[in-house]
Length: 115
Image (cartoon, rainbow, N blue to C red; front, side):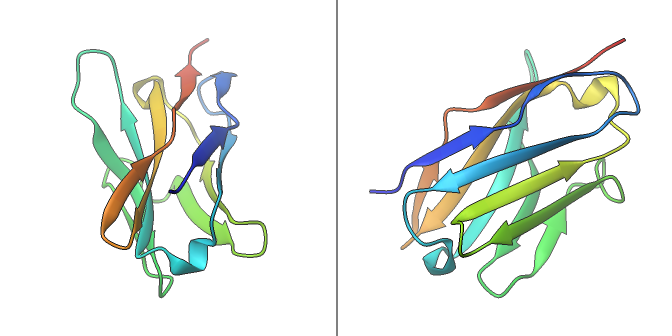
């Protein structure tokens, strides 16, 4: 069983930055992929960024150049650095891990971008 715990959300002004963390209960080196998703009110959950076991990253077009996904295997943690935040980035952000072809989810962390 994999447990994921997100942290780092909060309220930030437009143009500001936040770093989200996702701590895993098992080695992230064993994950096929780890991803960040987000869900805004009355919208579907969408993929924001992902990183594969080999280190390949991918991003939604809406966040390219502003968000960066990274990982620290020793700390069993994946990060999402979010810069130049916009009001439309407001959402609950979820960490997702694919481990042995099973998907696991964290509880989510709220990010609100507002002046």
